[in-house]
Image (cartoon, rainbow, N blue to C red):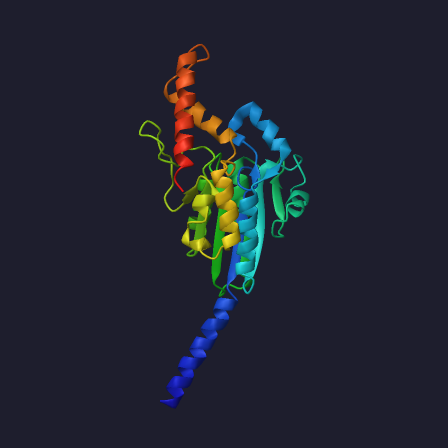
Amino acid sequence: MKQFKQLILLALFLLSIGSSWAKVVVFSDIDDTIKKANSMGGVLGAIHFFRKKVYKRTRDLFQELESYHADDNISFYYVSAAPEISFDAQKWLLAHQFPQGPSYLRRIDSGQTYDYKFRTIRRLLHKEMDKNPAEPLKVYFFGDNSSKDPKVYTDVVYSLGLEDAHIFIRDVSTKARNWDPELEIEKLDGINYFFSEMELLEFDEFSFVSEGLKERTFSEYKKKTLVPYYTQGTLVKRIERINQCTSRRLICKSKALLKAKKYWKQYHGLY
C-alpha cells in the first residue's frame, strides 16, 4: 500500500512538471489581423495599408496571453503574405509592444499566398515539435478571412495531426456573421470567427483576460471604434453585388448603404 501511494504521488508530480513544461506556440497573420489594412477595400484600401494602425485590443490580448503562459515555454511567430519590401514588420511589432517573436513576410520567389503560408507555418511547427517530441503542444492561430488564413490554418492542423489547436479568424470580409438571410454565410468547420474583440473575449480560451482589458474593449465597442469603419463599406459592397447595383443605379446603392447601416447599428446594440 505504501509503494502504491508513492507511485501515485510520483505520477502526480510528473504530471505537474509536464504541465509546466507544456509548449505553447502562437501564430499570427499581420494585415487585417493585428494591423488595420483594409485588404477588402480594393485600391482605396492602400490608404489604410500604408498607415499601419494597430488593433490595440488584440495586441493587449497577446500580451496577456504571454503573461498567462509565463510558466510555459511560449513562442510567437508572425507570418504574413505581405511583400517583404512593404514594411519593416519586426520594427512595427516592437514599436507597438507585441510579444517578441520572429516575423516572416513573403519574398518575390516565395510563391502564392496559400503555398507560402502553409509551407512556412508547417516548417516552423515541425521545428518546435522536433525540439522535444514528447512535450505537450498547444497552438493558437490568429488570422482573418480576407484571403487564405482559414484554409491554411485548418490544413496545417490536419496535416500535422495537432490535437490542441485553436483557430481564431477576424471576419473582415463580413461573411461569417448572420446579418440577414440574403447574405450568404461562409465558414469553415473548426474555426472560431469574430467580428470584433468583444466576441473574441467570449471564447473559453481567453477566460483569463483582465477586467481592465474587458473594460477597454467594451468602451471602444460602445464608441463604435472597435471595428474599423471601413468594414461597413465592405458590407455595403456585398449587398450591392447581391442586388446587382451598377454605378447608374443610385437608388439601389442608396438602399444597400441603408441596409449596411442598419446591420451596423444592430451589431453595436448586442452588448
